[in-house]
Amino acid sequence: MNTRPVRGWALPATAHALFDANETRYLVLDDGQMMRFDAAKAPETVLGPGPRPLGLHDDVVLTSDGSTARLGDLSLRDEDVDGTGLVEAIAVGDGLVVLDERGVVQHWTPESQHDVASGVQSLLDANSDAVLVTQGLALAVYALDGTGPTWTRPPRGSHGERITAGTLIDDGGVLVAREGYAMTGEEDVVEIERWGAEELLWRHAHGEVILGLASTSIGVLAHDQSGAILRLTAEAATELHHVASGVRDWVDLGGTVCIAAWFHVHGLGETGLLWTVEHPGMPSAMSHFGSLLLVVGDDGNDWTGPEPLAVVDLDGAVFDVDPSELTAWVPPPLQEQDEIPRMVDASLSFDEALAHEWNAPSGLLDALEERAPETEIADDADEDLLAALTQNGPQAGVSVFSVDLGEEREVRAAEDGVAEVLLEAKVTGAPEQGVDYAWSTSDGREIGSKARLLLRLPRGAHRFELRARHPDGRWAMDSVHIRVE
Image (cartoon, rainbow, N blue to C red; front, side):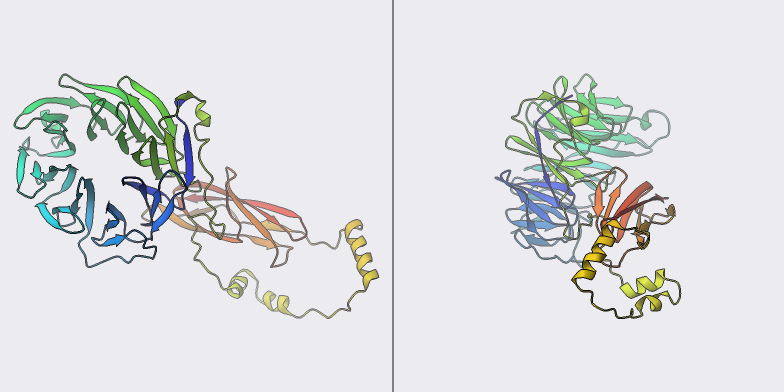
């Protein structure tokens, strides 16, 4: 399979978005943190956790709660619960186009804001001159300066329709995809329309719902919910490539369009697929950065895996590689201070005495805490004899060392599809202190080194193993199956 050289940087958490700046890029992590990357060194944190950043203008960050923050503030940011929340932001030449939860679109800069349109249901596209929005049954273009609508598409069909995608065309006009609400007849078809300044130029029907449209260097493209990439002309909609899943992002490099979908980034040219880079999960955002392509995204089903930033070398030669080696670039995950993976709640604390009372039969704790009889201190000869007996003599006096993780368990997930599961090692034949623990998943990934782990697991079957090392060097092992329904 053809691929390109890739370098990976490990991140402390999943990055879901990338903001462009002149000489750098900013990564937005899932806890609201931001990291700066200049391609010369590892990403560094420049904004602390808090409300999700939606846009960046100079050093001012606009966040989802409608408030602002400045790069360099590493403190925990509080959410402004009294402010007007923001739904989406699109960067334009001199600021941001923002849709808030009231349905108002604004042109925003840190110094000034003015309304562009109201009663808006979705913000589809924006550039330095105009915005494309849906309002009720209509699709409309508004001037960015706030002077009002410049174009409106009349709604079609007596049963109604849904606008599923739309984009402003660079040379003027609008491309729009719609789905009719009728159960039968002409109104239920999925269609793509190309509008000029005043009139409909062409229309094509399609079998799957269209989720994205773009005017690119290799033609006007669409992608549908099945993963088909279509090239659109006045004559037809022709499939250029199929990525087997819905597209999550695309970037035009000039002569090549990069498609992020289902564990891969594909480079497409006018003739089809040129190269493929594999991601360990779901790539969701990309940015063209000089001669580099930056890719971030969720680690998908493998919640114990790394959280990488992929840096694709666009100047490097395309080379052939076995598909099994496509992820050789993926870095190991960053080690957390407590050696527990990110999905583990490290804030959980236990009262040790209560933990023993919970596990021990009545009266056993008191017996264990009774003072042992004092013994005489052995002299050197006694120590030598004891060592000789320990090393060479019979081991009948050594207690059996074992760990037990319990029986197979079934737990029910919460509404978000995730369940919290506590894994706890019950140790026999070892002192309370000095035992080393090594937890791992079924594929051998180490996930912790504590006696207890609190994990957040998605629906499905999970298997975990524990290897424990006694202070005297002996090992014991057990495993447990967890099914999340």
